[in-house]
Length: 263
Image (tube, rainbow, N blue to C red; front, side, top):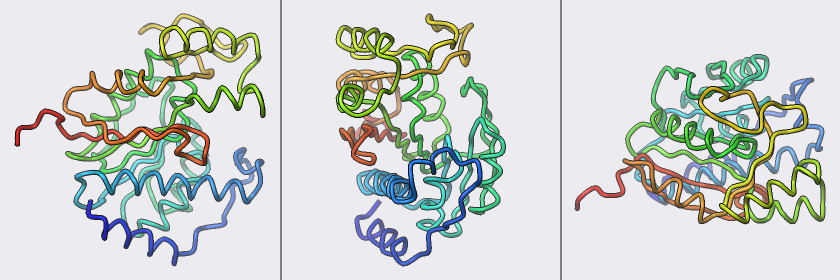
């Protein structure tokens, strides 16, 4: 997308009124109003950055997954008035809230995302803090499935726990029990991708037969993500930014643009 077009989107966003409507059961809002709204605004900047280096001519459709109760959705609606937006989440009440408050459609997701049928293609898919809770097997399967939902040249903008999350765990707050973290860190150092399910979440070994049965914490090295997405045909890695979302999560921008397309 042309830089001037992205600049116009941001200018219009800054002049728009971002909805202050908060769902009573919005757990993300417990972190406080200032943090809540700044994190949402940071997501929009990640998306605009991705658009600025993409071949998307214009944004005609957006998917927000998982949408929660609209921490990012409200900023998307302010920046893209009139553009169809789909809000997907395992929580039906969350998807319904976003659809009703931010003028879009609700999609009820499933633990096995690869089983979800989407009604249309998208120019932008925002995936905020989904892969941060998945093992490598599901990360590969789900990322491939999402790329398949893109229109030509569309982008997936997705977040991951990167190297900074090691500091978060050690210095600020625990993402997961320290005993389980040691297993995550060991695998991360050995293979570039570590994962462990939350206590009581079955099972430790993930396979096709157990997809969707476990949630936990993952940790990925930037080079491992580059290697992973390089194996997806018909795509092009546009960016990988450490601590790109809210100065915390790493951000991947992947386009449905053939990296080997001839000149």
